[in-house]
Image (cartoon, rainbow, N blue to C red):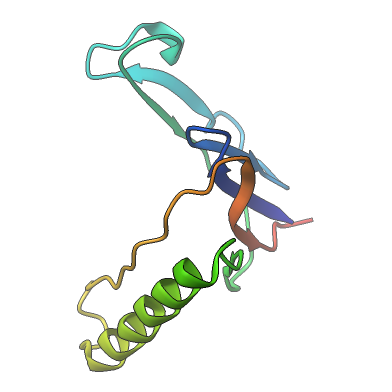
Length: 117
């Protein structure tokens, strides 16, 4: 199983777990003038390949901490659903919605997939 968690720790943090990492694909580097290794000021880029068989992503979004934000996010998800239904299949279009970053919620968004054994 592979997964990525994205959330807030008073900023934004991410944790990625690859279940079957393809050899020599994991990279972590400074970009756009950032230092080697990406530590410190400047941009940073990370990438890699987790080997999988055909399958699905499962996307989890934690229910927001307040009812006001919950209602706003629910309405945004409904609007995204309408946009998805109206999009042309195969058009490479994207559907999005806003989700406020919650502090001290390190796995607010989780995406999982089945890695190869």
